[in-house]
Length: 408
Image 1 (cartoon, rainbow, N blue to C red):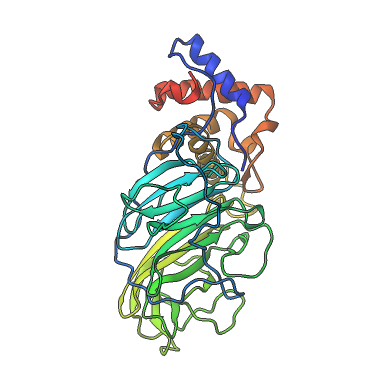
Image 2 (cartoon, rainbow, N blue to C red):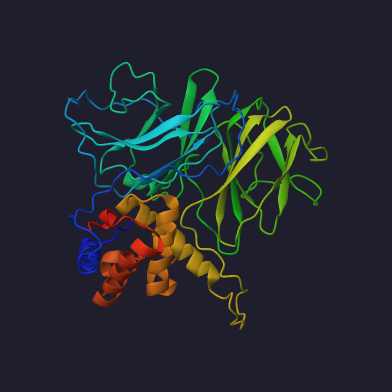
């Protein structure tokens, strides 16, 4: 993941000084982001699913830490330098949790979000290089604990081969209690286990169904598309059913809703749950995170994966040059840039999106996005760097951003 270069931050700070918007230094260390808005369903997650493993059928996050005991008596510095691997949490427990990142070595913990509610999804946060993403029971504190740490639900360290983007699903395991399954959205080294999400396919709306948080799935579940007879097989076929630590991809291109059926309904004639509304764009991958009870009490969190290239709203070969052409590209650029802005400057989601829109409109989506990802911002020429700095300065008025966030 790229970072907004220090030279742009310096240009911003200089612009703020000229504009007399306030004093400060040019430190671009990240401060913890503000809590995200809750966007998912609320439901209890009473699960009897198998605990995650590391087999070819799927594996989950190790919720214990093997880091050596460390002296944590020094007061935290208050800021940290974000690494290149980011995480977000989806809370499918029936209780709130707190989210932190922490350093390695001399352990320091930094609060990202407290009280992440059941059914809610956090913003992305990138731990310091070599550090960890930590989830605790709400109000427990002490994210740097290394001994007798019953309040720690997950301590996750990202590795380059797992890719730069992780979505962590929190669920209640009937044997071990609050647990986590780590889904790798952009794996680099593919080893064939269930943590790895499939690559995006041009033109397809790919939905990956994860049911680790569902109880009563001992015999699996089936999926149907509403208005179409029969069951839908996962991409690649086979007889594997939804349930446990399986992460099954389905082609739901053009689908507006789907339903869930029990294992013994082999024709998918009588749904046990649904219909669930579904909406995705061509080339996009979406998580379908089922939770609740398979005995007729399911809910679904539907969450787009990060950084996928989506359709610009016109068919291939179209000569349409109307106002909507390229809207998808701009939206993608804003989405990618808002993550960079939030991570670099520690802004909340709304402010980061506002700032990202100013930057994208100043430079153009075609300059910032290449092959569905954000270009290396260090590669920007001086004119683009100047324009980015000017957009950041303008955001102090347009978006109400505190100039101190940019070192101004």
